[in-house]
Amino acid sequence: VQLQASGGGMVQAGGSLRLSCAASGTYSSINSFAWYRQHPGKQREQVASISGDGATVYAAPVQGRFTISRDNAENTVSLQMNSLEPEDTAVYYCFVAFYSAIDDKTRVRWGQGTLVTVSS
Image (cartoon, rainbow, N blue to C red; front, side, top):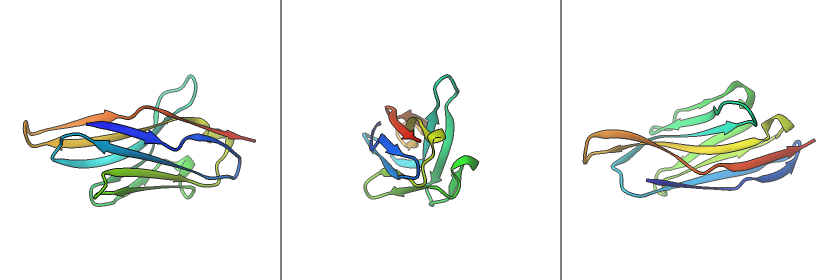
């Protein structure tokens, strides 16, 4: 399974960006998607996640500003980021947990990072 992320860039504080990530490859089902971010010199942290049935979880700093969604038909996940703040500047990574019936295992994959820069 591979993940291809897109949508990063630079925006002024208060602006919006939308990140997207597409999963491709061989798998039986996708359990969950998530977005993580990593600030320079800090550990990667989860921003938002969405389960197979659409249940979402958000980190406190982004609650009410970010929205995660998934398209099960297209196997994509998106992160709509509104009211962006300079503190949101980070490299964002998409993440997928998927199940393979071939060997009855759940695996995870990370997408390549995409840089989001919010200027004040």
